[in-house]
Structure formats: structure tokens, C-alpha cells
Length: 294
Image (cartoon, rainbow, N blue to C red; front, side, top):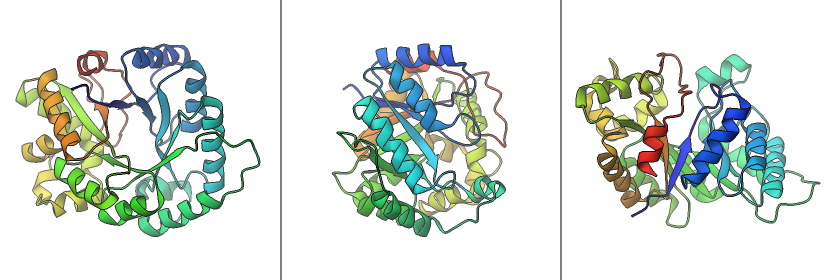
């Protein structure tokens, strides 16, 4: 079985010319989609426009654009423009982010369900005076808890999950239903040594291990504070990451498909990467892993 693969990749460590080369290489490997994250680096919509102009098949999407960074009208305009010019190869991935990332920008934190509901309502009614894309952009929202998943079921085309268990995927699929897309991002370590593989996974996931939004979801599945403290327990690391040789990783990834995922968004853990506890960025391109999984 050929797995439906996407990639989530920070581009900040890659200059423009190399970035074009790398995305063309990713396209040649058969990856369906490249998801562009957003914190404080390259602006995802302009980056997507550049890369869509350089490619022919692969989708280039925001994964995940911060709804506090631009209003719904701006997102609607960008999504329509990008899909108009690329013949439908852009998905509008949206997320509410986290207080520690939005409050320093001068925004007042709003409860996630309230914020996303109002944002999607305005997105639907935003005025568009440019030519309409022949295929509207798919709207995919990030949401790990049932509240946002119900918003996705009612007002979006899909749900994006990140650093979650197979059980979370099953629960989410039951909420959003069979017709919605469900891309699932999974941190992957190409290493069959349990000690070194888990150590790298812990370093790569350190930023996310500190976030209360993830704690709440994991605790609903029976994990406890001890599981995400001190870098993360083996049990939690094994539940939210895929490590081993390529066949072992593929087997774990297939379990997400069996649970309802429609795309596996690979998030590589790079050996030798200088992961910092307060940073989510992984800027290297792990071609050994990407080629092994394609």
C-alpha cells in the first residue's frame, strides 16, 4: 500500500534557490502536499505563492496559519488568489495557536472555539472582488480537542491533527465524519535504536511537551503529568511519534490511516539538529527519511 504522504517543513534554514530545488525534489518523490508552518519566520502565503509558481503537481498549503496574524478577509483573499493561480493546489490551514505565541504580538487571547467560529463565519462572507478560483481552497483547521473538532465538522472541509495518538485520530474521525479530510502530522525518527530514537524524539518535541493544550488532550487519554514532564515518558513518545527503520515507521503510519487519517504529514526529527527547548523549529530537510518513506 502506497501511503498518502505530505510533509510539514520549516523553510527558514533554506535559501530561496535551494528551497525551489528541494520542493521539486519532494514533488518528484510523489508527496501530495507541503504544509508551511507559521511562527515568526517566512510568511506562509507569500512562500506558498512562490513555490506554487515553481511546481506543477504538489499542493503547497498553510500548515498552520495563525488566525491572529491576519483577519479573515485577508485569509479569504489570499486563499482565493493562490488557488486561482495554481489551479486548486492550495489548502487554507488555520489554527488558533497558543497564548504564549499570540499575546506578545499584542493580541488578546480568545477561547479557541469562539475565536475559530467567528473567524470561519467571516471567512465565508468575506468580500472577494478578484476572479474566483475555479476550485475553492479547502479549509482545514487544527484542533485536537472535541470543541474545535466539532467546529471543523460544521464549518470546515477538514481537520488537521498534530502530535497525537492513534486513539485521538479515531475519536476525531467519529466527530468530523467520513467526508471530511483528516491530515495527521507525525514526528518520525529514522533510527531503530530505542534509546537514541526516543532521545531525539524528546528533543524535537520539547517545545510541544510544554504546552497546556496538548496536556489536556493527552490527559483525556489516560496520560499523566509524569508522561510529559522531564522530556516525556517512553509511553507518550511511542504513542505520538513513529521511530525505527523505514518499514517499522510505515507500519505505525498505516495505523493512523486505519484509524481514519486521510494523509500522513511527515514531520522529521533530524539527527544532529540543534533543537532548543523553547523552539519548535526544525530547519533541516531529512532526505534519507523522506526517500525511505516515499
